[in-house]
Length: 88
Image (tube, rainbow, N blue to C red):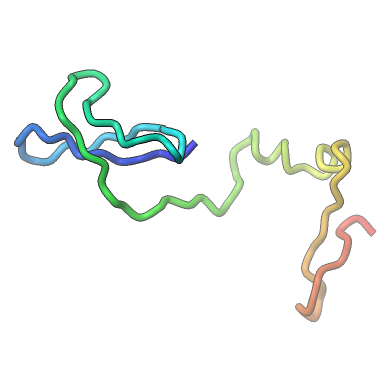
């Protein structure tokens, strides 16, 4: 589920920003889930993680696990024009 940022509209400085996980098609939340203060969804740049380095991700992307689930691994070929099977 996407993580959305909200600004707490309580007039305090500095502005408080909270994050709420919601389905993509949900209407924006209007009140802080803990304090019941009014909030508004703000536009922010996405946060992308491009390296899968956690232990769980490494395990799920391991050669053995991918093969167990019927996936083939590919790697870029030496001349950079396409991909070859990584396991032969």
